[in-house]
Image (cartoon, rainbow, N blue to C red; front, side):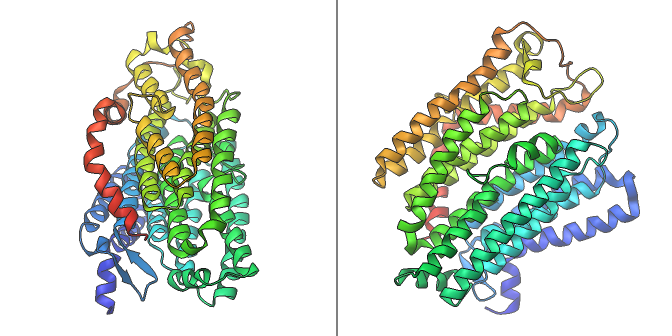
Length: 483
């Protein structure tokens, strides 16, 4: 392809990059007063990038001699990323306005846009170096966002921990890439796949292990999950919304791209790693969440648990399994956005955030609407029918069974039962414990948040099953782009 055709294929990334640079200049000139305008302009930029996906950017062509893949799989993942990023920007002003000591600055939405550029490169990568550059762009923005509340020691600690452990994981991934390059002779996915299709030597297999270890950190899969609870607890809640949704989608899509596209012929080798990480994440995420007293830490372990279920579809190694993962991540994004939007409404009379699970006691009597929505999200995350969260769990179990991994599916189902306990504990606290009266009523600044909660609750309600019929062929087409 010529240069102009390549630029058309990366149009969403160009829209985000140019938008971020322009808004950075606006922020520099306008200062603190430009924060709200820059935030809404950033949402408009994300909408523009989403519109750009409707053209050649999802045609299935390769740009820059195969370095960048503009296919249906990448387009689907980017839609989820842009939606989750937009929500993370929209809910931030009200949160920072109620939090003493730190005001929202216009750099926040700009960093979100730059992170979205990196995530887009991750899911569209056709080359290991493009993958690494995209991952580092996203990570550098994430490190700053995690420590965005400069006067909050927990936020600074979260940013530092994320940076140190992220640097370690990046080194592991880069070492794995260097091994794969050294023994395959290329960083391009197609040529790497050809090397694995031949009899792979020990060097290629060791490189595979290191690459998957680096990716496991990004998706917060056991045993590379250790950063997740501390970062989720310490980082500002709107930032955690992005970590738990947009960045999770990008990391899981990256895992799918590398496993099925670059290393597809080595299925038997990486399948063992994925199955172990899946079951370990399901069981550890379920058990470790039981004793948590902080709601954000509990949701961090919930994200680890849910990544385990998503990896079940990848472990199947089939197109149906990949489609099940995309369906799972779609519903997971909605459930998680709804859950964190409820957490954003947990605040005391002084406006400061309240994060203890005990503060939810008796919420059904003081804030019945909020309690009902949170109960729906908890039931759905637990995979309890008739809520929509049951469907993606069934889809990944079905994919594993169809691939002949019956024991894998049974173990995942058992882990799902164990994990239901801590979700039900939240519901019990809200509906059966005496009111704690710690969480105050809603205010005018919460109207938009409540609207988003209502939309998320409607999507994961039984009415959400109406979306399965139009969603299934889209996820199937996106997954087939990897094969």
